[in-house]
Length: 441
Image (cartoon, rainbow, N blue to C red):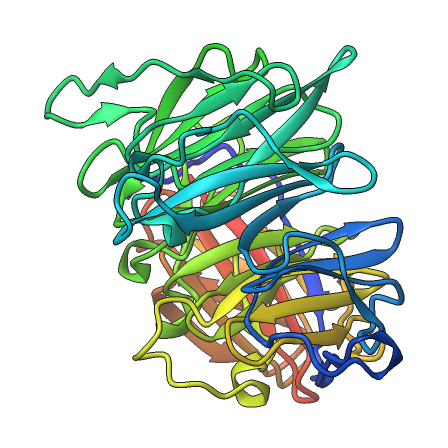
């Protein structure tokens, strides 16, 4: 596992979670028209309206609270991915024309009154539909007067439309230098972020080694950076904290890390191992306006981190939406934020919402934890509340030392620790958790 050592400052956060409730959104159609299907996939937000793809097309909730769902087109089709950032786009999974036992992908565009099929995979060939459930995201970007659309496929590469879906170009494969795999071929997700022309693709160019592919010219040319050795990549997010741009990368196989983080554009990565078994199958990462990271584990949990991914706490979604995780690949489909609420879609029980206001979930700079190191690097000086439990962890999540603070200032011997980044947690007697980090040179 790679670690980075360029953090020479401290992140010190304090956060408290008084678990709110996940409330099931009504799936009733408007005007008493019965319920829409509870099989829900990716969601989208436009003009404060909530949209969701289902096994029966797209539905719109004008209130974003349910109970007023109206059909928004493509009824009868399995609408798997949505992207409404510029154009309204929907990716469907349909029966292939050349083999009725296989699936294929189709991309539709809303023209203001109805949905029209774009030029992507016009023949509905099965080669475009291998393992469609592995796909998690696609991107669109504004390039002057044109909208560039970039689609991933599992085994048939990255496809790019420079003109809003009318024409399509495949990104050429590149041979891996040491095995028979190829870059830009197996791509579960493509991501773009507001204010940037950079596009990121999750690239499974080896049996287990995962890569991040990057394009700075609207998807025309690509480079790739190695991340780590785990199984499938699915999730990516980017945000800036204290002037530093962070990339977050996740996927399947938590024994190798649930969230990978880079502060140098993907050249080096460190990993958070703090989630336990529930961290497997990291399908989605998002953040709110204060930088808290929310992580969706497709097999049954939602987590929040208030310390830039160092530690996570459960938001108790499994207790509210019970489901055996042994019989389905992905029970939770998608996670997004709208009007201070988390929205969670599922493959059999509709959509749930979690209020970030009433939950008491806070992120504040903490004045209850202060960390410093002696000049000779042998003692860690921790100032916190008397009676607090102070714990030191390695960056991989291994507990190294723990003491109970007998007064406001505690000293821990760290002369035996190697040069690295370490985490410090202080849990007060009232249950308030503060987290910091230090660098041992």
